[in-house]
Each structure stands twice: as C-alpha cells, then as structure tokens.
Length: 186
Image (tube, rainbow, N blue to C red; front, side, top):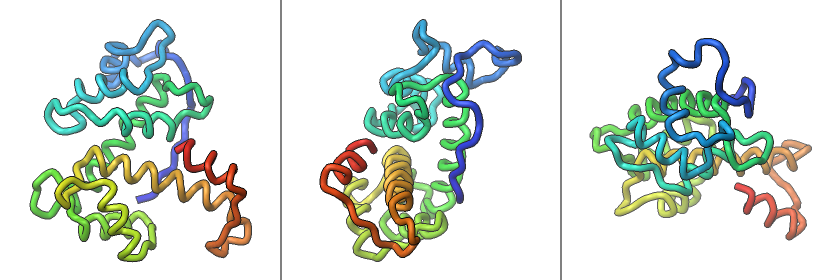
C-alpha cells in the first residue's frame, strides 16, 4: 500500500459541492472561525465520524501525528481539503488493518503487524518489528488507533532518512542537532 498525498493543502472550506460532502459536515462541526482544525478538534471530529471504532476517541498524539503528516504550511492545523484527504487515507488504513486482523478482534498482533508492514514496503528485522510492536501495543495487541500512529511515524522517519540517503545505500550521517530536530518534528 503506497502512501502518496496529492491535492490542495490548507484550503478553507466553502467551495462548490462541499455542503453535500459528508466529510464537510464533520469538519464544520468542529472547525473554528479560521476554517482550520487542530489536534483536539480532529480528535472530536474523528470520534463523531466513528473512525476509531464505535465512539472511542483517537489518541490525541495520533491526531497530532496525522496533522503533521499533511501540514504543508506547518500551522499545526488542517483545512478542509487536508481533512478530506486524511479521511481517504484513514479509510485505506482501516481496510489494510482489517485485512491483517485475522481473528476480527479489532487488533493486530506482532506477526500480523510484521506482515502488514512488509506489504507496505517496510523491510524490517524481526527485532525492529518487536521494538515497534512493544511501543505501539497493549498486552501484545495493537489497536487501529496505534496502528495509524505507527504507520505515520514509520513513513515520516523513512522519508526523513531517504532525504539524507543521497546515495540510496541505506546509510546516513546525522549531526546530533539535525537528528534531534528530525525525530522531534515527527
């Protein structure tokens, strides 16, 4: 599953046809006067939409990660077009997640996570997957919310690494300050 994010970023709501768009209703129910939503507003919006499963709210840190993934203007918020794009991405992640949730428990275990990551093109050692699994699991199970956080963080870390791996050899050199800025911006 490739993650390509194309489209217009940061646009305020109000274009033609948006009133009929179901995402628009969720968006305007929480967006402030600025026509943007922050992480707390995104959390409320996704809960109303039932995307985390039932009416369980997404973790606030997951919402921050999702905003940072699409926040091209670095405002810490997203406009309607970014939000709509995020909705499509979340639906794709949900389908992908469900395809690996073999027992339909609403969670994936470490082996299911490893297979899911492999299908997304991540070639990670069992030790790396175990570390990731420990970070994102509770009692050895990873919820959809944490699965999204894991996918966003892996994608962002991989993108950061690839930008510095100019020779495409799988090796980079970081100055300490650059490393801290790269990791902390994710």
